[in-house]
Length: 387
Ligand SMILES: Cc1cc2nc3c(=O)[nH]c(=O)nc-3n(C[C@H](O)[C@H](O)[C@H](O)COP(=O)(O)OP(=O)(O)OC[C@H]3O[C@@H](n4cnc5c(N)ncnc54)[C@H](O)[C@@H]3O)c2cc1C
Image (cartoon, rainbow, N blue to C red; front, top):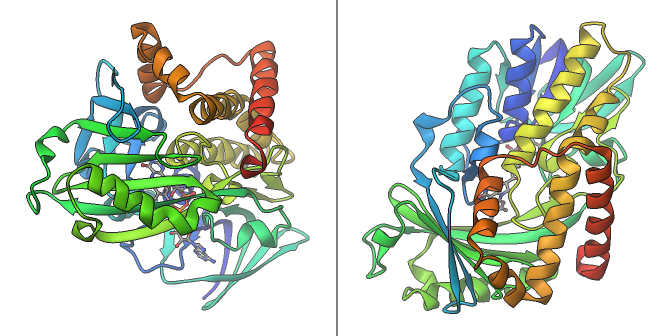
């Protein structure tokens, strides 16, 4: 393969495919490569919040298996619980194998040239763009989109410092395989706090199975199997009942880390954009690819001279959201009873439900500054795990 193009997108997960789609829609020539053979799976709960789905330029209905209309939050396995009703669907439940194949299909339909089973080996910035060396040849492009996730090659190749990490493990319980009452999990999801340091356990409803998972501080990695086994036992099943068990790192950006370097951008997990509280990353993947491709489009079309609009817009859109996530994490880690107390108030439950459906929208400089300060303090107070 010897190619020249406008944009090379490395990685065909949610961030890469949607970036490729948007750029092709604007008329750019786009090549997208992924080291995996598609369709491929990716360790993930497969929950797309409504605020994430709304960012997409098309509906994902064909691959949605359930819509979560109620989230139950508990303290401990059998402790106090609160129900969050969002007044409509809050999360769309899918499987990554299906979602990612669907997103690639949309990108290809828009004119993107896609090569799977192609691994990027090296990236060199040239005078007029970028040269990407893969195991099947080289691709020269004016602009690079690094969308290759937590274990990709572009972040390090661009000299961007490593993020911090959380870690998670999940598996599927086929419906009807045990005595587990899966009728409780048709449009309900469960989040159990206070069971995994730095995170939580979950049960998500899917079409023919329920997804059980646990995630927490990276240092909890060696204990994750034990935490998952405890979650299973607490719900009357054995961890051996789960199939397709797999774990993965969740990258969490350190503040100030660059996301645009010369003629390259990082999006989604490659930029370390996972929400430090929820561990979600698809809203951030869709948002960053939208903002990055706006900046790339402006540059390619001659209305901007660089990609600096991307980090600026990302900071405005995501800054308060990330700060709020650190504050929520501090409260749930240090004073879970306070969180449960807050969730007793119907208005607060409404706010939480609304946040899953719509992003935070206060873009004022004052609100952003206040959020940044609180977020920084919360992160510091959480100690070395959050550094
Ligand atoms: C257990 C677990 C549960 C999660 N649950 C949720 C959830 O319910 N909801 C949610 O919103 N988020 C969840 N997340 C986070 C979410 O999975 C990620 O944030 C999301 O996948 C990020 O998408 P992405 O496109 O940036 O990266 P990825 O989805 O990781 O895609 C990166 C792609 O790049 C490819 N690639 C890597 N290296 C190379 C290379 N050298 N050359 C070519 N291609 C390469 C990979 O094959 C891959 O296809 C979860 C994460 C974990 C680990």
